[in-house]
Length: 281
Image (tube, rainbow, N blue to C red; front, side, top):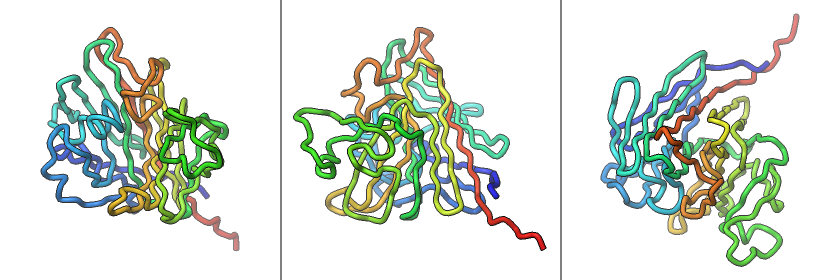
């Protein structure tokens, strides 16, 4: 029997607006990696991975590292948390309705401003967890996967594209134990995925206007990153855009602020738990 279970979220506006909890039916879905360096970050600094869910904007890879919001303090304004950078102002309102978490975003910037955004959610998942997305979804893999595929990586290719769930033979829907690999992927034109781990399922759905490119980013780090002290971490990241680095984005691969100077989108998160059927006496 599949039962919907309420989801709750908590954030830390003072330290980059990071989501510190995403819980359902007694389970904490977010993975954490405490690092004291997080408390001394400054805008433009190297990313400090503390786990949770980070708001990566206006880029994910590239500069600034993981964007320009995670390293800035946020402030409260009415029912929203707000972060300001030299180029944009981002409002985020999180509420709980009908057992779901709804995160509503409003970005203000000059018309024509280009950006990527990702809800950089690092999830606490076992080796048997699976990621479910529509079969055949065009999935981009990036050069860190070059040694994992059975053909040479083309010179100067920023990414290769194959069908989900096994682009170029990589079974990306399965996570598994630490094996020393780290792969980033982007499931393009995809806005709704489910993660199952044992009896529990987490569903992430992105709602946007029709002309905004949407994707799901995947970071499957099975002990392959960072080189000096690798650890296992799994990122399932609803995003605006279709690449990791804004500097590499073609015209149709990034979100663009419209003429009224505001861009809006919403992330919906729900959860279910499967329980055994009770036998009839």
